[in-house]
Each structure stands twice: as C-alpha cells, then as structure tokens.
Length: 212
Image (cartoon, helix red, strand yellow):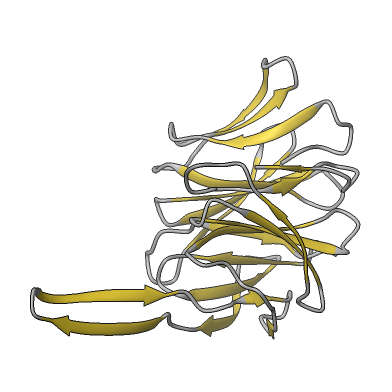
C-alpha cells in the first residue's frame, strides 16, 4: 500500500512482519509481534497508524514509528486475511476464510459480525464425483451491507481495495485479472496481462494508478 508521499509503501511479509519500505528498496520501519505470516497491511486515512492481519489469528494496530497500539484476537481463533480502518478511523473491519466479516470499535470490542457462505455445486459422473465452488459477489460497505456488483470475476477474489479519493474499488482474482468498479457496482476497467492468479491490487496514493 502506497503512502501519500509517493516515496514509501507498506508490504506484508511471510516472516511475521510488515515493513515500511522506500521506493529504493530500503526498510525504514518493521512492525513486529505477529506469530504467523502477515497477510495484509494498510495505512489509516491520516497515515499516522497502520493495521496488519495475520495467519496467527490476530489484527494489530501500530503507530507509524512501530509502537504497538492494540492487538485484537479473532473471536473464533481463525486466520485473519485482511483488515482495514473505516474512513474516520473509529472502527476496523476484518475478514477471514471462515466467511465472517467482523467490525470492531476503537477499543477492540467486536461490535458486529456478518456471515455468509459460498455457493456449492456437487456433480456426480461416471468417473466419480467432484465439487465446484462458486464465489459469491460480496463487496461490503463499512457497516457490512452488501453492495450489488455486475460482471463479476470468474474465479475466487483474493483482495479488494478502495481508492484514496473514495470513488473506486479494485479487486484481484484467481482469473488472472484485476477489475476496477464504481460504488454502483459497474465494471469500469479490466486489467489483464498476468498469466497466473492476481493475489493483490491496490491504488497509488493519488488514485491515478493501480499496481497488481
């Protein structure tokens, strides 16, 4: 995730840390304390804090200088794949592979839980049986309400990010594409070129570019 200065960005790492890195590749700050691979790292809207989530089932909030502010353990001790601040910084949202969206207040209290499941089709043929999972179209606002979308991805969606100007959403998928959406659910652009699953997509600080 790019900082608004355009000179630094956040990376999440499999060594249980997140790092603030300059565009020349040097590490400016490490954020430590997780017990599993860090899957996601994002800035707060004022860029004074970062939020990280990990395979260890925790979400952590740090000040930009690396000081740990708050550690939140998932209610069900599950992996936390992604987390984010609300625009006003008063609540955070986390998601994991258990199909739960958790909303927490600034003290770390779980204020809401939203739950959904993928649609499953089971087919049986002469050579045996197989299962096919079809991912549902799920983008939520900061209150957990589902937003309707059109021309959805063909396969599993790995990440979603909101532009800094709060006008667009970009999603990354196992169908080897990233897609740009408006908040009415309209597909604005398909980003092609990858030959394997796209794990992550995010906006530049000025919302004019997308990196995958």
